[in-house]
Amino acid sequence: MNGKLLGILIGMTAATSLQAADVTSAMLANTAKDPSSVLSFGIGSEGQRYSPLTQINTKTVGKLIPAWSFSFGGEKQRGQESQPLIHNGKMFVTGSYSRIFAIDLKNGAKLWKYEHRLPDGIMPCCDVVNRGAALYGNLVIFGTLDAQLVALDQDTGKVVWKEKVDDYAAGYSMTSAPLIAKGLLLTGVSGGEFGIVGRVEARDPMTGQLVWTRPTVEGHMGYKYDKAGKAIENGISGTTNKSWPGELWKTGGAATWMGGTYDNSTGLAYFGTGNPAPWNSHLRPGDNLFSSSTVALDVTTGQIKWAYQNTPNDAWDFDGANEFVTFDMDGKRYGGKADRNGFFYVIDAKDGKLQNAFPFVKKITWATSIDLKTGRPNFVAANRPGDPTKGADGKKGSTVFSAPAFLGAKNQMPMAYSPQTKLFYVPANEWGMDIWNEPISYKKGGAFLGAGFTIRPIFDDYIGAMRAVDPKTGKIVWEIKNNAPLWGGVMSTAGGLVFYGTPEGYLKAVDAKNGKELWKFQTGSGVVAPPVTWLEGGTQYVAVVSGWGGAVPLWGGEVAKKVSFLEQGGSVWVFKLIKG
Ligand code: CA
Image (cartoon, rainbow, N blue to C red; front, side, top):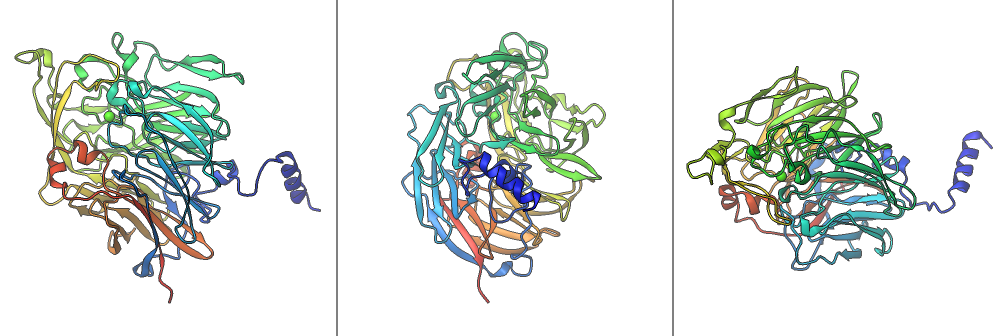
């Protein structure tokens, strides 16, 4: 018997409860390279959304046809922003209103469904969406609109554990996919429009028990938890009142609503944080850390290793929640982030030092550029909405036109990176807003904005633009304009393809090198979710969820009117190449 085999046998004996189909940390670390499954959101915890598969490629993609489709059913349609997971012959896919389905990969038949019982008073800001689940052991785990985590048995759909994360009546909710890193379940919270306190939590994925919590608003205490669940102080995030005046840090927002990414080579998890609360920036002079930032956390200790703030003293709800996608460039590990504020940032993944920052949309009014030496934006002071206390009646500050609009140059729809082309593929939007500030005070469960707004298109012929971005030069290598705002995610493949969906209902495949459209399919409703691909029995499949909704119809102002003809839906489509 050779040493390697002996090691495997000893390992098996030690973990007697481990089943063959159980998802392990080793499998999760390898999922970006192993095309037989899709074990995590982001197609790998780094979030590159790149598949090594080549069966479907620039030459064959024209022969892509539907294999099966599955309807989420019911009257509960609305926005479907979910990325499916693929494992052990099953697809796990979440739907609107905190639902999750397990589907037989062979034929699209439903294996089980779990519908979370939601209370009447949930307060999701931006539609009743869910973006996906996490897999660990024999469990599939997802967050709900009433701020709970639910872990289900992958085979039966039975609830194994359920934990309340926070009080939905205070505005907390959960919409993003949990992240598994170093055997821990990492989650964020939504609710930045209600003055919640953003944080990242680490739990034992098998039991739901808390391991540590780390607030993302400067001044709050972090905690570790012992085996009995007792909280032990683990250091304040930053320094109380250093970047926040008075008591405002207690309701400071910085929601970690998009979840995070994790890079094995740095051991750090990267979470974007949303707007500081309230939106009226005149009430909170200072940088308001760690809002509208990327926060890098040591997964083992729960400490903030570094933070980079994209929009200090954010006045436009630019958030900063966008995903930080790690990649190699010039022999170093960096992260790329296409921020809602219109700038694309390239940052050293280890120490948070800014390497490059450049616009990825045509019009940005709030800053002229990002100073690469200091890392701070060069603000245009006149384009900050005016202070209401200086207005004529003290009730409304001066209105400014601002671009991007608060729905962002990019929002929740995740971008992709291709190590083959060394380009990022960014679903961008060109829009602006009239925005003004009003007085506001915090009330539990009330919108905590102190601002009014109307979103408007900037150009007549398009709002969305699928853009290939070179992180080294800051050049837009190619773009594809889209009439409606893009709201679905992207996937790149070694077959030289980029897949993305449109609100008009199409899933499209284009040439990763030049953006030439090679294939499209009408899914019957708007696509606002990211595609995935995998290999099963020698056949490559592609899947995407279809179902128009999300923040645009609710908050889009003039843009929402422009796209009001789009119909809702709720289904997942699976494709493969036609034989011969
Ligand atoms: Ca926000």
